[in-house]
Length: 350
Image (cartoon, rainbow, N blue to C red; front, side, top):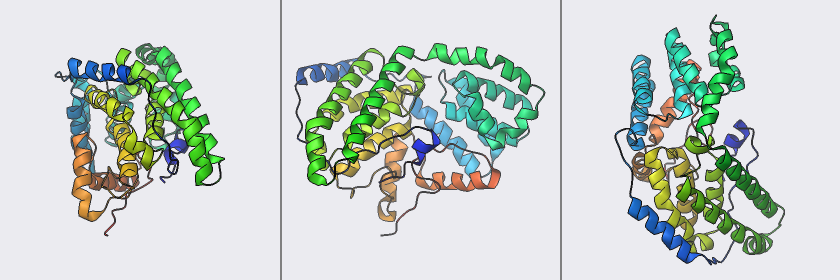
């Protein structure tokens, strides 16, 4: 079971996905799902010049590779290029670009990326909390940024879909309550009964709700609702109920093409996609098949398989992630590595 450190960092209480609940799949909405599946086949994958977010993430990996080799000026140039050529930019990339500019003493770029980050949802309290960014608070321009914070924040609030955000947050809270119920059932049999009677129907309703959102709005992640973990947690719960349930499940297989489409359009990050899919791989194979390296430590013999999976969705290789951890310690920067594992990912030799 992964350590819930990411939840702690975000000051949110997240129930871990199920591991020992056996549930028999029941569906009463197959015709609706077939319609949904055909909808995404007919619409196809949108992949225009500025909408190819696999390319976006590969450019970010190039920047991260430069950071791993301590070529910080080159890394900042790559981030500047990514940010300048895409309409939507993930907040994490503004945060890193701001820190790189500060590390290189490029004040105007610091101020530029900082303000752009605020328009992308970077909160004032989080900026102040980052100890590496403390020198910015002494800039004469800082007081002006504080004064303009609300007007910059309005740009962010105008971009996100507040109605969908509220709906997804409500779904997330319901999911947490249902998952919490399993923790109070002692023994596998009690957990199986709870899963069969309570969690499975709930999760199927959650998936139906997600399908409605996907058809009408797209994937509800950072781009749409300004949050990158509510829905991925719900999907993680669904994919981790039990081996028996997962083998019989068809809902995720219907939804997965939409997630792949969302990956191309920047609606879901590679990390979110990997966490969701890693649960499916781990549960289906009883944690023996090579996955993305989050739920199970990667094994040296199959490391290339893990890295191939990561590369296909625009996620950095395990070795690069571990290099970045070293650079964080050396420079004091925070790369906001969005992984459950703190520090390096261990590679097992067996």
